[in-house]
Image 1: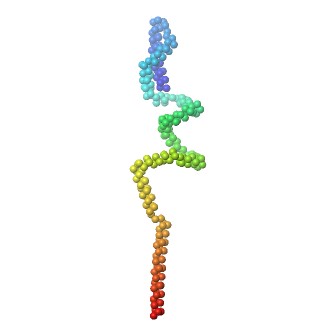
Image 2 (image 1 turned 120 degrees about the horizontal axis):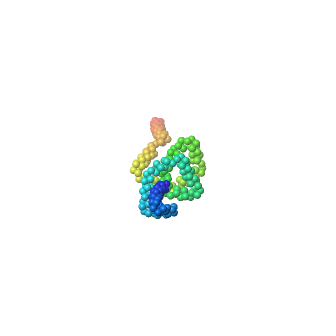
Image 3 (image 1 turned 90 degrees about the vertical axis):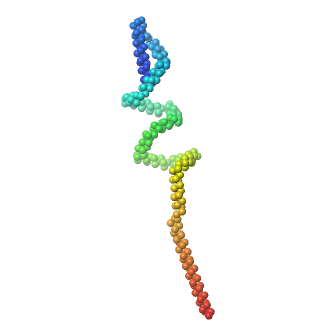
Length: 234
């Protein structure tokens, strides 16, 4: 669009100059320059370095007004552009071309950046929709989805990615401190006796006291029996 407008402006200027030259020549010699001669002259002029520089300068000047010129499109023109783009995107002829473009890392990265904000906003709006939530739950509960998730989790590539993420995280000092704090808390909780262990310990202590009391009582009885035997012997 920019180049065509610049080319049109340059050609118009050249035609204006050439028409002036033709008028002067016709006034002097009563000969008119034919269309074929004008076309040949224009092509020859466009091939010169001066013409190429003029085209570049005009395109650079027009690029500053590209935002304003795009706003000048009428509603009908905008609709036609939208329909044309839609026809190209859904056309089977351009399917392979679009797939190749999406595989290209540069194009895919730029495309993802351009639609990232819109995608986030769309997801936020969809999450608020009850029907979308219900459909999402159905998809997640689908056995095929569970199978696919399990296959991904069990894949070697996924495990490598998880290991690399863990290694990168362990290099962070703050993450290390958090892990150490969690380990300390876990050790302290393991060392604390559970309520069942406390009850068993109390039972053992009470059982030991009763046993010692019984043993002490049996000793007293045997001592009393010895004394009675001595008295009878006397």
